[in-house]
Each structure stands twice: as C-alpha cells, then as structure tokens.
Length: 164
Image (cartoon, rainbow, N blue to C red; front, side, top):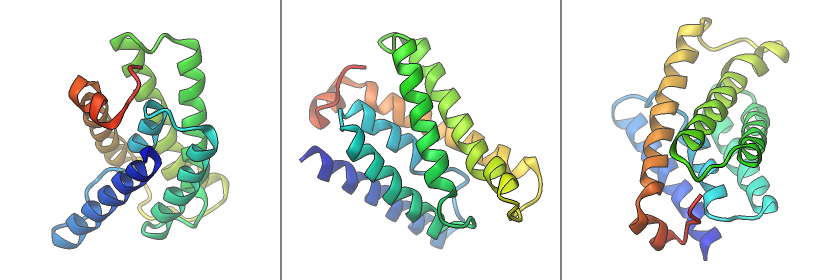
C-alpha cells in the first residue's frame, strides 16, 4: 500500500505541476527529486526506489527540455549521494539531515541541468548559469518544504514514515 500511495503522490505532484504550467507558467523547480528522496523516509526498498527513479526521471525528461536519461542519471547519483550521507551522518539530528538534503539536491540539479548536458555535448536550453541557479534555488525551497512536511508526527503516522 505504501508503494501505491508513494506513486500516487508523485503522480499528483506531476499533475499539479502540469496544471500550474498550463495555467500560468511552469514553476521554477524540479518537482520530483525531493519526493524521490522522501521514498527513503517511507522505507521503500532499493529496487523500488530504482524503479521510481527510472519512471519519474523519464517522465521528467519527457516533459522537459532534456533528452531522455539525463534526469534518471542525476536522480540516481543524487539518491546514491544521499544514501552515503545517511550512512556517514546521524540523520536523527536536525542539522545533519538538512545539510545532506541541501547537498544532494544541489548536486542532483547541477548534474541534471548543467553538467550532464555539457558532458554529453547537448545544447543547453538557456545558456547561462542564472537559469540553473533559479531552478536550483526553487528546488531547494521545495525540498525544504517537503522535508518540513515529513517532520510532523501526524504526517509520519499517517504515511507510516520512519523517524529518520
């Protein structure tokens, strides 16, 4: 049931993101990576996380400007980095958990929007680091809101989240 709820949550965020993009303008953040990180707090297995990264990374690339696969690679590397930080730091304390969230989101978005297109010699949609910085700051704010949402005990009990 947790897996179905997790994917329905991702689908709902995707639909809301597309609705806002059609209504006004596309919001300036990556809607998927902070919620994909949330799968670790839900206690999903690594196989289920890899499937979620593959599915939602390809969905993100389909509706964005990149060729398919760049988001999958950056999401996988960002989750791997977060798992390594989780092993090295005690994520039960406020500051190390927040620091690992900020580092993994920053690395993931820089890879997805700047480094992978440069390494694969793809043309960047908007040349300039300002565009990448805006999306990075928006994703950091979105990730911080998602992380704060998971800190409430009522939410943890409802979604059966572990107390990381």
